[in-house]
Structures are given as structure tokens and as C-alpha cells.
Image (cartoon, rainbow, N blue to C red; front, side, top):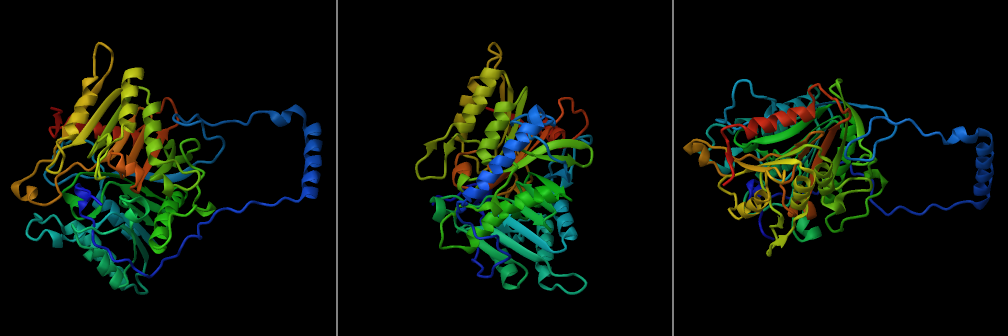
Length: 491
């Protein structure tokens, strides 16, 4: 398997813990129900009787709520409460103007989740390097937040009557030779957490668990770009969401974690046919109605990749991205670390123009303004420029084709530049005039065909939504970064 030569190249060597957490129901193929012919005949008679007496009023259309842009509507349903806010890591030394939008830091968000946790903490992660053991003498004293998070997780081994022990369950990706799994080995060996390891090459031939997810007490969660890495808290630019007091949405994302846990605890089996316990009724056609922060009516859902890990009803992450692009009205703003219309981690590259084609159609056929903010750092592959240039070349003021590209560069001091896999804009999000998308995947084909990730999609319901909300906040972040001195014209 070709190693992922990106920030995530630091997957930790993880041992597969034999201990198990509370397991989901065993996935299996649903059995066909049998019918009693006598009962069916009786039901038909009753139905005909009701039709005769209720008359045409029986067929009156049901009232509908607001139409969801990007789906077919969500019908009747109640609004689920949820407090959601953006969280981001601004690397040390990256300075914006005083009036620029700022949000809760990733470190503060994780501290809040740990402080609120009473019974359980589930973490899905790519790799673990919360302590600076891999970078002695080169941390610029910025590893403290990561080490603090790790010490709080490790303290869970003590428990006690005053601080009841949490059930911490960690699903992590298969280790690589690049970094050790010392963090999770310590947590597992001390009894602080139960750890399972997923081997994606066994199922797909390649790929990793690339999700970055925390779930607390089945009520709160973090989803975003930040790995379990001390650099993700101080040296790498990250974007995510913190959802609190959000039982319905958390229950739905927990089903994705349960699938990871199942695969990690059933090493000798293939990917199963997920049973009803993993199904969801929330997707791009029927999103969840959400009362966000008690002041915004929005609709949202969680998408996942790759398709074999998506249970019935779950929208694939790629389909969610394409749907957002295809339903944009005026603009599409994208911020990702890597953008490739390729399968890049196979021995032989394959052309994969799915997202690239969708963006071209949006710009050419519908006149959508497309802006891409793509990262540039020491691990960027210069060949990416060819594909970005190809996209930029079709821009034409005469033909009303507006495509703009900038490179985001996180500069740093000499000491900061010496920290491996640091100083990069690691964001993975998109925002349009109606929809916000925050994901865990870079934008090349591998991340949608054989790599596990999650995308959170949330949309405004009202055509004239004027108050500030999660989507407008994300738009403000993009404009801040696009117009900052760290965004450079693409050349």
C-alpha cells in the first residue's frame, strides 16, 4: 500500500485491543416477513370501508414545511434542538485583523467535551500523536494543549467516586511505519480506554480511517479536520463543528461510529450488510429539521464514505458534495488542503474527474462563481498545479465563467518550519449561498472510494434568512481567509 504523504502520514502504530466496548447489534441481512392471507383479506375489507366513508377528504395533500434546497423536501417533522458552533485552530503566529471573525478553538472545544462527559466518550481517529515524543526539541513549547488533552484522557484510568470513570472507546486506523502508537498503547494498557484498529487495506486494498470525531454521552460531538495530534491544536489550521445538547443528531452520527467499532472488533469478517440498527432516515432527500442555537431553523444530515460503510438511508459523502455543487444558486466557496481529479494513492494514478466536472458545469452552464482556496506547504505535490490551471483556464469574463483560485500558505518562524507536518491549512469545507458543508476528507478520489470520512451538511430553510447562523459564519471565515495576506494568487 502506498503511504499517504500528507499531514495524516503520521498514523500511529496501534495494537488491536482484544477488549470490547458495548457492541452494536450484529449486522445481518433482514429476513423477509411472512403474511397471513386471512388477515390480509380482512385488512383489505376494512380499508375499502374507510375509503367509502371518508370520501375525497382522505386524499387531501398533507401540509408541508419549507422546501429544502438541495433535496426533495422533508415533509412533516419536529425541529430537533441543537447548539452548534464553528471551532477552528488558528496556528500560532497567524495573525488576522482585530475585527476578523474568531470562534472557539479546537483545544477549548475538546476541553468542553471532556469537562461535560459523564458516562462515555467515543473517538474515531486517523492517528495519535498528542504528545511531542516524535518531535523532541522542535515543539516551540506549543505541544502543551495536546499533552494536556492526553493527560486528561489518561487520568480516566483512576476513576473514583468523585470523578466516575468514563467508558472511552477509540476506533483508529491501521498503524503505519511513520509514527508509533504510543498514545493509544498507553491508554489501552492502563485501562483508560478500549482501543480497536481498522485495517482498510483488508477490505478495500488501500485506504484508511480518516474520520476525526468525538462523541460524548450520546449528546454532544465534535467533527472536523483536526487529528488527534498536538499540532492540530497549535500549529495546523483546522476547521470543525462542536454540537452540544444535540441528542438526535448525535444519535445519528453514533451509528457511523458503531460501524467502525464493529469492523474493529470483527477482524476476520468482511464488510457486512448493515441491519436496521445502523440505518438512518436523514439524508439529502429527507434532512433533519434542526433548531440551531434556538434562533435558526435549519435542515441537516450526516454523509459518510466509502459507500460500503454507508447503511441504508445514508447519503454517500461524494453524493452530498455533488448535490451541494449542483444546487448552488450564485457562488461556491471551497477550502481544502488537497484538490486532485485523480486516484492518487494507488500504484498507478487514475483519472477521477467527478468533482472537477461538477464545478465546471456549475461555472459554465449556470454562471456560478467558483472560488477555491487550496493549501500550499512543503508536502504539496507540484503536479497538482496542472489540474488547478486546467480549471482556471476555462474562466472567461466574456462568457460569464468565473473561476478563481488562491493558495493559502501558513508561514512560520525557522523553529516552527522545523516541526514536521506542521504549518498548513488543513481545512475541508465548502459553503454556498444556501448550504454549509464541513468534512474530514481531502478532495481526491481515494477519499471517497476506499477511505472512511464524514461530511456534515446544513442548510438554511428560509429564502430570506437574514440573521447570523452557522452557514453565514462559515462564509465569513472563507472571506477572511480569501482576503488575508496568507492567500496568494495562483501561479
